[in-house]
Amino acid sequence: MIRDLELAFIKIHILHHADKEGVFGIGLMAELARHGYGIGPGTLYPTLAKLEKGGFLTCAARTVEHKQRKYYHITPKGRALLNNMRAKLKELYQEVIEEQ
Image 1: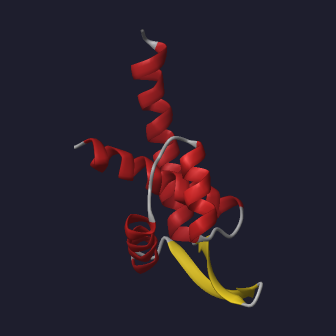
Image 2: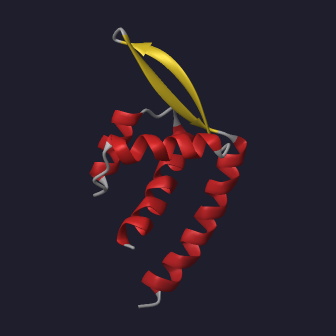
Image 3: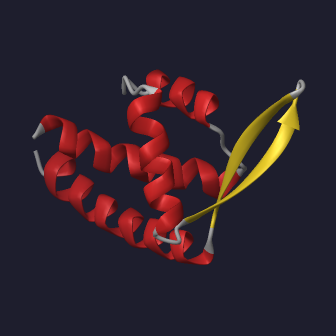
């Protein structure tokens, strides 16, 4: 159950960062670790693929230091979902944190 909840937060993080700039796997793992989420490639890449398949992200490969790197960018559908989740997070924060 804990992992399911963390994965929901991880997906929101991914959309948030993809809304700011193109994101890639290793960079996302480092950013998520900074927030306390230990996520490996075996979880991250299938999550990115699902978000892409769902139409929330697009993917474009670029060569960086002679290696192919996949960069993910948010789509309009992904931005709409992120904005919806922001509203829900704000409401949840107000109820769970501020009402203590």
